[in-house]
Image (cartoon, rainbow, N blue to C red; front, side):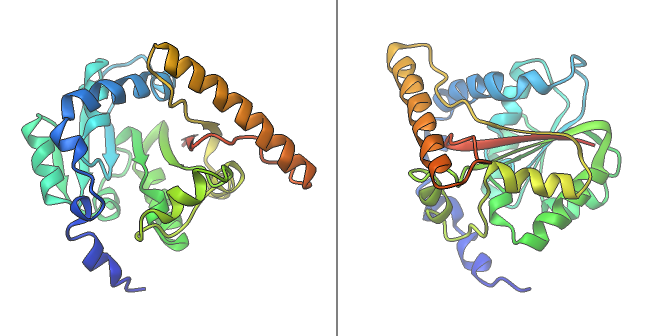
Length: 243
């Protein structure tokens, strides 16, 4: 299907969404993203620092820089935005301006870790299947895909995250996200709530406690309405799936 809106929306995507903060205050944002990386992603990484890592839809390359900051230097980025690719190269991140699907079609058994942060919800259902299958082929044996997405089970942040961007096509809960990876026969599929309160200060401690109370309250309300399967109500979901 020819999705014409993409020609208009992605042309000036960052500007249209007022997403200039990362570029204008990159060093400060990188500190936070590195903390986020350590809390949420690093525990799944193998000890071997030479593993091959790629970020599909890498944006400004912050997660790849976080990889390098933690000793993983064999990184590559792919993004459709010319300005993002230029920014990555200026920060010594190998990056190519290509469609992620087309890029991975020629990369069978090439990567140990594939990042897919905040991208899967921009795809149609058929595109999700096609992309995950080509990612599976691009993974080496026992390699992992790491996906981050808005959690639609949270009634406060879910709808806002889904509809804040006109280019979003779909949304996920923990159940539907795992459903897709199970259907494509990934192994060791794990979905968990992203930890977003990563600063070591009293304000974040309080926020973390409030989040736990809110999540428990939402679970009880969901349970009362007969929805017993949903247990994660954090702002974002992370899925780690192994080939």
